[in-house]
Every structure is written in structure tokens, then in C-alpha cells.
Figure 1 (cartoon, rainbow, N blue to C red):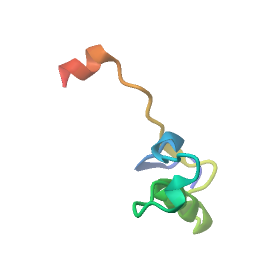
Figure 2 (figure 1 turned 60 degrees about the horizontal axis):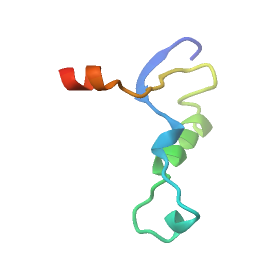
Figure 3 (figure 1 turned 45 degrees about the vertical axis):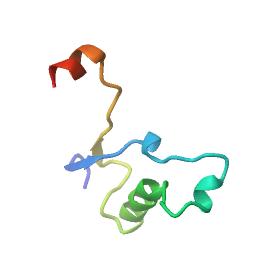
Length: 65
């Protein structure tokens, strides 16, 4: 697994929390974290796995799209 690059994009910021209200909301706003942890638990991913970690896009780049 070391050095293998998977087509997975993940950032902790995808998980939305708001003072615990996410626990009672019907939409699972922390599902991305749960999926990521499950992939690590099932050994699909490891600490050495290279993931794409997105950053903020600039307005100039966004306007080109």
C-alpha cells in the first residue's frame, strides 16, 4: 500500500458539525469521516496511503471554470 495513490479526495472539513445538532439531524453530516475510518479499519487505506487533500480554490481559478 505504501506510495500507492488512490483516486480518493478527502478533507476533514467535509464533516459538518454544529454543537451536536448533527446527532439528531436526519442527514448524516459526518458520514465522510465514518467512511474514511472504515477504509482504514478494513485496511483499504493506511497512514502511508497518498490521498488528494484539497485546498481552497482562488477566485481567479474559480472564474476560469
